[in-house]
Length: 499
Image (cartoon, rainbow, N blue to C red; front, side, top):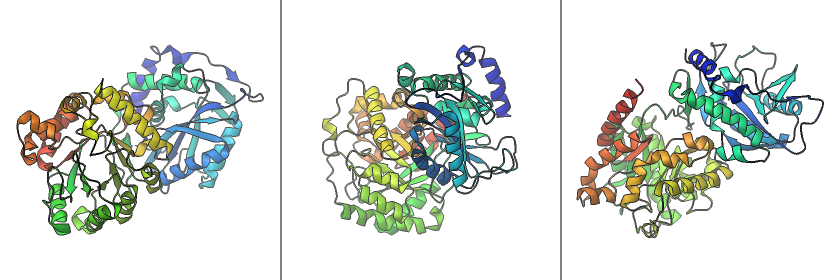
């Protein structure tokens, strides 16, 4: 039903998007298009085997075929189209540069599909381990008995339009480089998707973005707010240092948080309060690894993702080996030069937080001319470094870092300005989940007069609701019940705005 609705919306929208109807140059495939490289958009999909692994491995093969990947979209799970009696698909898209001519590019993609077991004699639109389609080649049209560009059915497929819209980078639309022609096409798609309220029509039944989690179902994070329960085993944490007694006490507290609404458990052994001393790798490992192993062995927690809160790459590696599903790095990779490469190798989701300096110096680095603008720009730079190291954008969770290198006014500006921060992100990062951690922070105590951190839970719940109203997707919390209740109310208000 939603696909049909999207199709009818498109038919109405083309009248107000004349750029979609402009006549493009039709290319004679017997002649080279141009010297140098061409920018292309390629859609990918899979619904057989380990679809995410198939897609990752295929993308890694593309450079050996003369296809340089520039960026990727989010990952989407979609209902099968045309032939409905088959598994759901994983879909996405990528932008790339290539010196291959269109038919050469087609042959290269077919060879990659074949390497993953694609049966070209199988049922049309049927199940497949890998599907790679050329959607755009520069800003040009190609007509051949083997190939049509633009892809003739892209406009009727939300599972193609949504990833293509993710690829749009505004700065390329005004450049004169090889990406200019593709940028014009992607601008058209982005405008079509936005004006048609494509994101609002996504649903779990039809199409939704997700983050893959190892040994757990895909994490469809967009439908509601997720609560990350804080499990600190640090004797010097600002809020609950020394509160938990050993692994047994920590396991009991984790189970209690899940009962009260925690969707994720975040395990931390290194305090990041202002002025905290950095542990050695060995000290941090001794604190967190036994607990993570015990959490993974606890029956009540088998379906709960475990996050490790660390800025140490070796701790992250050992934590994932022990059973952690994601890495939560308050430094965004700035405190350990090996972190991004390590997370890329670990192949897990990565919470990339904004911070200046380190816990000892960060509160002397709180000067901003425009807090949201600068935090967004610095987050984008950190994310680009992470992606350059091999972390796909669809594994990145953004955190603007409340309380880290921010004074009170800066924290309040961030809470009210999440959309301005998002606007500084490029491509698919603009649509990735955002995590906020206002829980029991010092600025709440300054505002309310509560010097004891545990007395700030009411203010935390209010802060969480405000963050959610402004676009937060995940809230990190000590008092899970209070924040979970606040999240349910905030989600209900946001849902009512769509009714």
